[in-house]
Image (cartoon, rainbow, N blue to C red):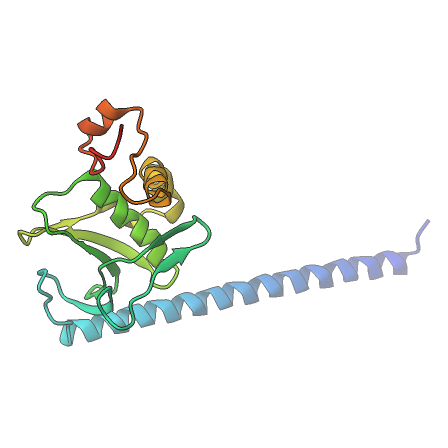
Length: 200
């Protein structure tokens, strides 16, 4: 049978261990609070600066700072290894709200499904460098169509546009002017597929 002193010592050790655990938890909570406070202060500071010194109005009707342009000397291909997609968006802006926006410029006057898929995949690719959460398609008539799904997670975007990405990869892998085998041709026509005429 253990002596009283041994029992007391064991209890004291358990108490000390519990105290260490509680101190560690308190330290982690304090670090998390400091980090959150810094993030909040940074965001509020940015918003105050943009309130008094807003970005200039772009030709597309919103305020923003140009971060990337496909026709600039710093043009590059963004590649997301995790999802195996690459893209060269036309423009990337930082909006007055602090959000990063990807723009695709089109000469036609209407949006087709492949435009939306291209923008969505572009957002996923751009996220390897910029935290893009906004996206828009600018048409030849000046209209700007904002993509509501731009704020989705990358995995959700890729699941949603899986079929379009698969088709684009098949097209890219084939020689130029070659026909693309497409079994659900009627369905493609219903969706106004931009590759109609290349299928057989």
